[in-house]
Length: 324
Ligand code: PBG
Image 1: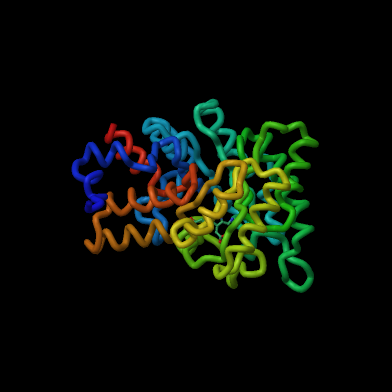
Image 2: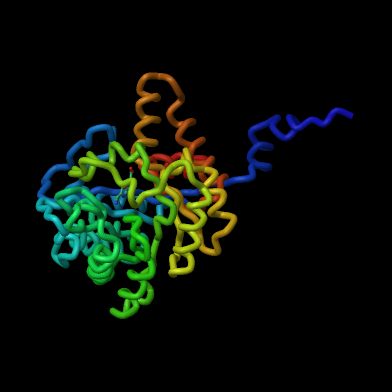
């Protein structure tokens, strides 16, 4: 007897019935950029419809996200002033703290607010940490800044801190600082396996990054997966509440591996370059934009991520909502 797998694909209804993976708006996390000093939102080179927001349009984006069923946003802020130590990052009246505070006042508990915890947007050299005398990123000195930043952002009202700096011991340091300050319910979304990827290109424009070199001494080498498991394991041991793999599409094997070992939710970040690739190919007519977006998001879900951070979040959530 001929085995006929096609039988279960013979109508849209049966395909829905047997689908192994489902994606809902609740799985999606929306990244947002707030630029200090803007009155109008501003386009970003290579980021198509993603904008740097003013305080007002930032809050409007939160409303749009809520309206389509999204439950979480990842907030990045771009400051007016930068210096060697990224001191604005630890300013309780700085642009990121103000963004979180205004978001909290605007949405209450309806959205999970994730604040990016890293120095790169705030340093004049663009690195994710402070530099030592030789100009290298000083891991342990950086942790001191991360501790301070964590308490400032928790105090502003963040639910989760997105530790994106790839410093050793950052999750433990931040957990200790939060607990010592009484923020026991503020969690850590750990960028556990973050690669030194070329797919962050457009993001660097979004945050007006000053980086001249690369981040290869702290972000991971894209040839490695065993090393990613070690990073994930360490973040789990240090108290990560969610572990994230980044980028997503070229790292689905890493997402899968993370899902297999993690006892906390696994997230993946479909980064700016992945977003831009799809927009660019679609604008040239090389692919069906909506189909391609949904296909990539489902593939990330299929690999094992239950939380997907994506610039397509609002649009995709809208489509997913319409299907029902
Ligand atoms: C750095 C950070 C980066 C991204 C998020 N946080 C860039 C980098 O590591 O160079 C990239 C996100 C994207 O490309 O969408 N804190």
